[in-house]
Length: 144
Ligand code: HEC
Image (tube, rainbow, N blue to C red):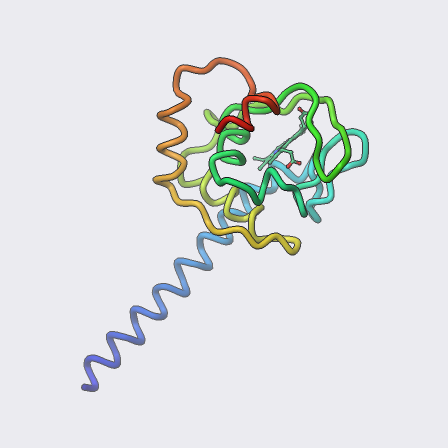
């Protein structure tokens, strides 16, 4: 019994450690995004849309994954405000683990409460969108 409880405690500790590691990685990757979207996820009015409370971030997981992998261009409405800029793609800068970490991070910060995404989710979206060239548009995101 003592051995079993020690094992349970070790597994619990390892889980806490790996969760902390995943969060740290998400926060680290987010340092790249915060130049535009800001550390508090509020963006900058008229230039960079907010991630805090964004329906695109907290909706279907494939949407923020696709945006990070391929970028976004053209008019998009976020929280009732229109933006019309260009966001670069990050799919060659970040691997599946890093994309999963940052998307999980933005879905769970600043009051956002959407489920985590996994490396496998990112790999699936990456494979499904492999042939595409250029950034997504709002209309295309709605079809994902
Ligand atoms: C150089 C500035 C810049 C950086 C860096 C940047 N973005 Fe963006 N992002 C934008 C702009 C501009 C748009 C809106 C594009 C448009 O108008 O079509 C956008 C849109 C988005 C959207 C969809 C709209 C919304 O507000 O929900 C998400 C999600 C997003 N970015 C996530 C990220 C993540 C995650 C990173 C870091 C990996 C990142 N962005 C890095 C400029 C940036």
